[in-house]
Every structure is written in structure tokens, then in C-alpha cells.
Length: 440
Ligand code: PGA
Ligand code: ZN
Image (spheres, rainbow, N blue to C red):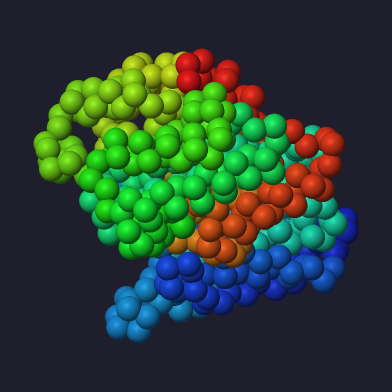
């Protein structure tokens, strides 16, 4: 690459990348994924594991998978080989602190607009492993390395406790029903409230629907045999209240419809009915009239800009409209659609493919006054990286599943650790929601 030769300006050799290595490991769904290691000369080993989605946006970075019969076609041996052979040699000698330079090299080695040569699974894992290596070498916490010394705001955990859509084998069309414990005084309490609600819900689902209903979906939420969003929202309402919390004021609700999944040729198929964009909006409005839903993610198909804009208009000061598949952590899309057609950005680093590109999308979202929500994927791992990222970017919320299954709790546990590391300087983002949502 032509340029200033950032790789040669290091004054401290211990930050230089000595070696980069990849390994095929498993994600939480039992599918192969890429683990990357970045070794510094100073002796630090940064690592990261790429997550993997099930309801992907059409424009996200693509994963490189082997195909064929082994590993049910999902092997990543080729991806790992490209990591070892193409990425490794190019990064050796580069200063690991130069994150954006490392990410630019990754993009350059890949050379495609969708990351299809190296695979977004390779670029994501290497990019994050590099950040972790640099932080370790510096001897600072990852959230501080990425966010600076003032990073001290813990996000509101929004917990997906009832699963539907492609994440579950039931008849719920919407993919996720979330609880939003914004009224808690700190992160630990927010998590306690959520856990108490989760267990209350578990008991009541078992009583009402039988023991099959407490089997969990991909993100640890229950997947009861419910048929409608009303049924799910009602169950959450009852669980919140019987656990002793004030609905709305203390714990509000959220929905990730993942609407691209139930969109067929111009219509939305919900509960067996064919809904137009306008019908679907009216349905959301009815639900919002009955329940304190402060968060709607992907309420319309990923290219239904008009639908999104109508939701922004309809729910001003009532709910944030968050783009996941709609924005795919992509700066250009945030610039084009943010603000008018979405008031929140879901951040998934592997949609962008590198940390730098994901942070660019965050900056664009901030410039438009949008809420930032850092997210896991439905196929995830023990890597708690997004916990650190959420604190670093002062995310309003983090979405990382139910408080169950280790790939989900690893993020919550890391946030508990961060809150405890920060001690009295830690702050909780709950109060920030009230700036965006005035009616609960
Ligand atoms: P995923 O979806 O299955 O693509 O990770 C999660 C989401 O829609 O938020
Ligand atoms: Zn989503």
C-alpha cells in the first residue's frame, strides 16, 4: 500500500505483530467458525472468534465457507488457510496499535466489496484479535483501549427472552421479544431484574404451555408454542409485573421483527394474513397502544425505506426504530437512511467485516443523533468482545440474548466485570433512554 508507511513508525517494537494464525472452532449452534490469534513481539496474544447470523441482511459482508459434505458444508478450512497464507504474512511487522491501518490492509488483501475472498469471518476475527493484542500489550482494558479513559457508561441490556421467527420452531412471526430494564440504577441491578423476570416467565410458561415451552431458542430465550405477538407481549407484561417491577417506567418492551424474513413479494405475512406496509404499521401502532414497546428493530423489509420512515414518524418520542438488516453496520447506508428512516443503529462488527468500518458506521449514526445498539449474532461464542465495544462506543443498549447459555452470559459477565472495575465512576445508560422516549 502506498502511503505514509505507518507500519514503520513504531518506536516501540513490542507492539509489532509477530505472527497471525487462524483456527477452525465451533460457534454456539455447532457450526464451524474462525478463531484468529494475533501475537505481538512483546509476548501478548490477542484472539477473537467470528460470530455468525441466521437472519442475515442482504448487504452484509459474506462468510467464506467450504461447502461440500464435511461439517455439513459449513467448514471454514479454506477461510483459515487464507487467513494463514494471505493475511498472516502481510501483517507481520505492522504496529498492532494502528487498528485502522490493519483494517485497511485486510480490505486491501480481500479486494472485494463484500469480503468474499477472505471472508468476513476472517476479516472480523483478525480485526478484533488485533485490537485485543494491542490492548493487552498496552496493559489496558479493551474497552478503555477502544473508548479512551472516559469510557464508563454501561449499556442497557435488552434481553431477548421470547424467541420466534427463524430462531425458533414455533409460530411467532416476529423474531425477538425483548425486555428493556432501563429504570434500574446500574447494570448489575438491570441484570438482576432481568434474571428475575426471566425465571418468573419460565415458571408461568411452564404452567400455561407445559414443559416443552421452556426449551430455549438460539439466543437462550424461550420458544413457547405461541401464535401471536400479543400473546408474547402479554406473557412478558405479566412476568414483569409479577416479578415486582413497574411495566414501562422501570422495564419496557422491545420487538425485533426481522421483517425481511416474513416479506414475500410486496406483502408481509403475519399470523397467516397478508399485510401491506400500511397494515403492518397499523398493527405496530395497535401493539404500541397496548404495551410500552420502546424499541422496534427491523419493523419492515430491509429495502422498505418508506416503511421504516413511516415508523420513525409514527413512533417519534415513543420508540426508537433500529436498523439491523436495514443498515448492516454500513456507513453509506447510515448516511443515506439514518435519521429519517431509522433512529437507531444496530452494530454487528461482522456485518461490516472490520472494526474500523463498524466504528465508521457508529460515527455516522452519532452524527445523525441516532441511538447505538451493539449486538451479538444468533450464532455466537465465548468471545465477550461486544461487551467491551458497547462501553467503548457509549452504546445506549446492548443486545446479547437471554441471561442463559454461556455464549450470551459471557457478555453479561464481562459487563459485570467492567462495572466492577470502574467502581464508583461507572454509570448506567438507563436515564439516556428517556431523552429519546417520553411516553412509556
Ligand atoms: P442473526 O439475527 O440471526 O442474523 O444474528 C439477529 C438479529 O436479527 O438481530
Ligand atoms: Zn435483528
